[in-house]
Length: 352
Image (cartoon, rainbow, N blue to C red; front, side, top):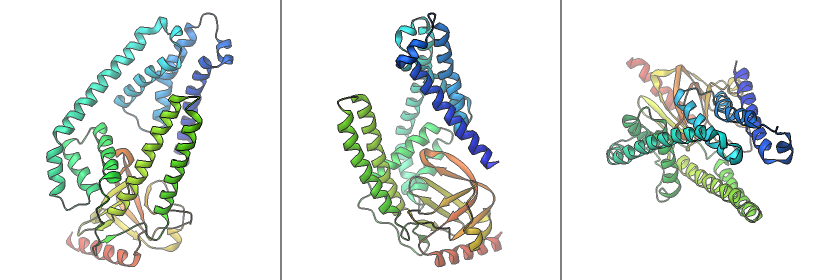
């Protein structure tokens, strides 16, 4: 079943890229323009349907995320994309459809702006909630935002970006907490060194590509420059978030995060079993398992595997939520970590 889902996702992505690229080639290459019939209205209708219906459905199949609001957003985005892909002289008969897409997109933007205004208005109480909490910032911030905006994906994406910029620029004087119940996840690896190497590679690529492209395609050069700058900020923020948010074992739960990429709150009452068997830990980790493992050039395995009674929700990049049945963890002090987890788990079982 897992292989089947991955295959469907891969095929959907391939078809999505094929639909977009074929429509672009049709109107922006000599071969494509020569193949257009004298009455091109039918071809234009087909392209509009491809970009506003087929492409959104393929995107949803690729992401395996289906919702009416998401589909409407993708439809209007497809109509706007059609204005850029299809030359204006071919769209003369379809201006009303194009303006409809722009109008719906405008309404959605106004709605998102109203949510942004509500977020700004609620910043002071959110900050007070964070300061009064003893939880790690990644968790206290998420919890405070959820109390105010539990069902607003746009707000969660925006808050995820705020965390990225905060860790990238506002945490250089901070030091990680080193208590008996906290455990780092990266010191047994070269993960941070690997991240720094990626940052250096992006900087070199940015300088090289910008110099090569600025005379031939200024727009593409600027787009790539913005994307690369964003990537650098993300990697810096990710390193800082990893350093400043070690795994924490409390009396009733575990708070574990891996930089900005993922975080999870695991209650001891939700843990079914702790697996330490080396043979099992060395097996391939299934997609129903979330990993909190610092990986570099060497093959590493988790120190333990937590099997949960039922799937528990984790927060991934951009605030995306996903449930997992198992949790694979590798820490820098595995013996002390296993000891405290077993003690707290046994204590919670006795109190139940």
